[in-house]
Image (spheres, rainbow, N blue to C red):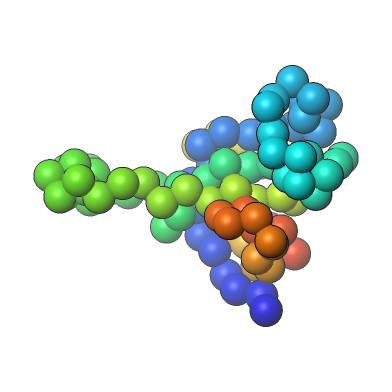
Length: 96
């Protein structure tokens, strides 16, 4: 079942760099010749949200997206995603 996920891109692994990273074998197979985007769920927080998260010790919720579309670090993306068998990893059906 597809869902919409909004996030801030923290790191990008290009298809050419996949072998340089110590990725889980399942993720490596899933990514194959696509981009892997490590994102902060919910997008970029405001400074107030950052302070509250620090004070309440609420961690960043990461999400890993496997997509055909390139994105750059710091960019905010909205994607229609489908969950994979790997916890926290989503396959992007549509990326904006």
